[in-house]
Amino acid sequence: MRIRTKGQAQEWAMLLPALIFITALIVVPFLLSVWFSFTDQRLVPRPIPTKIIGTTNYERMFVDPLFWQAIWNTVLFALIVTPVQLGMSLGAALVLNSAIPFRSFFRAIAILPLLLPMTVIVSIWAVLFRIPSGPFNAVYQWFAGQGAYVDFLGNSSTALLAIVALSAWATFPYQMLIYLAGLQDIPQDLYEAAKLDGAKAWQRFRYVTWPGLRNVNIFLLIITTVGALKLFTQVDILTKGGPNGATTTIIHYLFKQGYSTQKVGYASAVAVFFFLAVTAIALLQRRFLKNEGEA
Image (tube, rainbow, N blue to C red; front, top):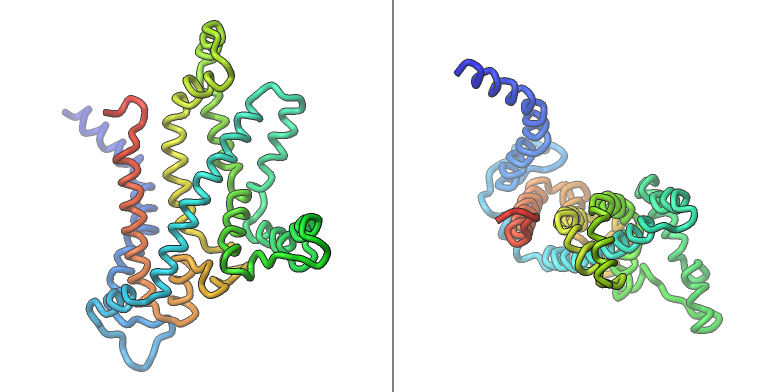
């Protein structure tokens, strides 16, 4: 009994730093957000004291067309960028895991976007998107003729797609590294047995590689989806949510309400809604996507 008590004490001692960290950075801020969401709290203190206004912030939020547009843009961005980013990551990992010349060199080149701050990457892509003579428009003019150009960020039909391309390129090395680790964890005996059975390259990928990456795929699908739902930096620097709200995401909407208009109470209501929505999505993904070996 004493040994068991001592063991439990050691376990709690090891968990304590993580519990303090989670409580201080997640639980307490969330509880404060829940409290603020029922008040008219402002960013800058006013002579009139803050008062409780019930569910008024939530009622305003659900009838605001810009809020629903931000929800739609965020979901659309996540639906597009997640498969694109995972596809790029898996393709790059497969190439860099094969016996190609200068493999170490290409691996170092591939992770370069991961080493750059997002603000630097966004600045580089702003130059690429520049009108009328940016590099992308120079390529476009080869096909469309001199003087033609596309306003990638100023057109509501292309602005979100432009941010999708930027975001997929900027962060795919992180997923690629995890895919590389997953590929190297698949026993080579399985590939050799498949070759002896006459399996082609596609069949080896279909029946050996893909099942072997099941747990990696589930993990990456969850973290990539959650990361996509938090889109902010690219939008704030490149488009400020425009044109006509075409790139307004829920985090950018929340930021504008909390800091630009100083409505902390209203922004807290949006934050609570967003937190619960992301948690529900993550739980649903875990509910329907079981790891290998799980019932």
